Image 1 (tube, rainbow over the protein chains, first blue to last red):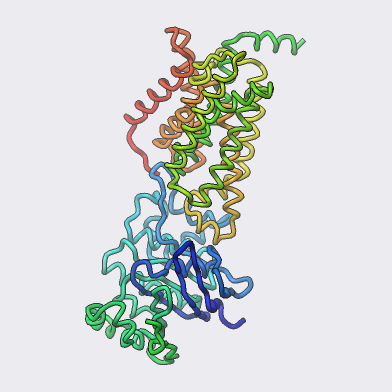
Image 2: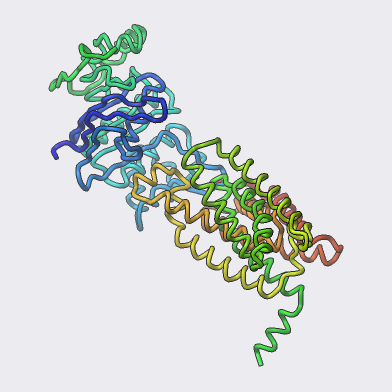
Length: 250
Length: 271
């Protein structure tokens, strides 16, 4: 299997709700795929299906064998009574991991919180620490569920740059969910626009010009996007042009 | 002979009470810590409330009452585990229904047993001064088993406490461990019944743990400190009960509350 992850024709129905409709995607090593979509579009559900936490009603999900997955959940709800330092949180992955934890914390730019309690971290620090935890497992695939949540705009930009840097250094694949439309476009190779079904997908440029995308997010979103998309450095070539906007079911 | 000497020491009801109380406090520390970390206080309450039904069950089958309590608590833990997986109702609603349903059903069942007269207060608030050697056996045997089980599950349980899905992705058998953990709590609650009674079991689980939080930088230190603080509460409560002739179970809980209040005066150490 060449791809790290292949999802083909997945449908997920729970009760009366059709959460995912005929979703297919592939993810190769070194590739960043971002899933965008409105609230309730099934973004997190798709992530859970990809991770094997939920079974699709129909369709196939296959991960390359022996794949190591680093998962960054949307939030940690740690009770204030739980005494847990960052060091311990990172080192829990296995025995004698504290040196590695320190190095990874440096990699994500949060070495100053090594000995802090988890509950004392700011939004940005917490996201970096959770990212370091995902990296502890030397992942082939990083799965990030809204990695910039609870972080101010400047911090968000930094986090997206960090994700790109991590990918460049480790050549792992990244699959992330984002709420935000503007900043993420500069940090991703491919965008998949989800609203139960895949509305359109492709490079950020193709997707943002797609009528299905415009319909889903409205012209405002796209107008704001222009502010951010050109001053970032990332490769624009190699456009697979897999956008299916023309065939969009809507 | 040493056996004869041991027997004379255990003949003293105060010694038995102290041993039973200390045993229960030792078990309660680590379990109580997990209960506060995972916000399971209401869950513990529900199991404890079902104990009365277990007592009725014990009388009905004429078996050891602790065994009756244990069986009912285990069944309820299983029921809760399954219904939470199904997400039938909001957890606290479900717990409320089962908790008060089981308590009331227990009272009604006992009322139907005409030839059974029970000292309800002893079951509600504990009867530590009436602890016998069989009870001590339950506390140290059953409690020891529960603690050994918890120690065995310690690391994966910490991972699950942080984030269930993260633990799943990292390859931990979350459901199996959660279920075992609930069964161990049910065992703990059953052996704690005699000392503090079904209404106060949760307090002896959570108050020492909450007190220990102020002094703990790691989960392990918190668990051990909670045990020690629980032991102090037992000693203080028994002393007070003896001195002022107050009910022993509630006195222990009052002592635990006092320790908690005193701990609030200590400068906070988060981490």
